[in-house]
Image (cartoon, rainbow, N blue to C red; front, side, top):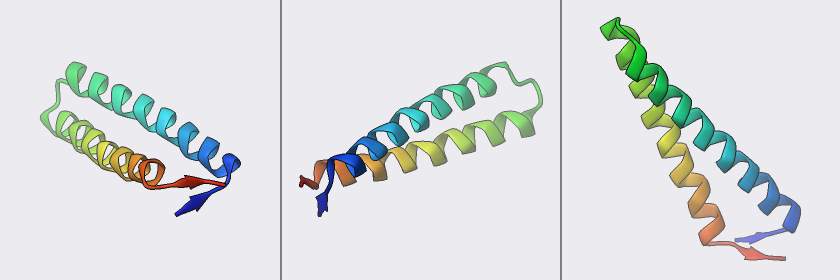
Length: 65
């Protein structure tokens, strides 16, 4: 896949935002006392982790134009 430098920058920005979301959801899961809320936060953190892996694949397989 060929990416422009602007596309690469946008993916990198999304990676940073996704990393922040993961940290936030993990923090929420740690302080949550309700089991349903804790489970929801953990699930959301896992979903964001999956998204992060997908974004990273785009960068690792890309050629910069």
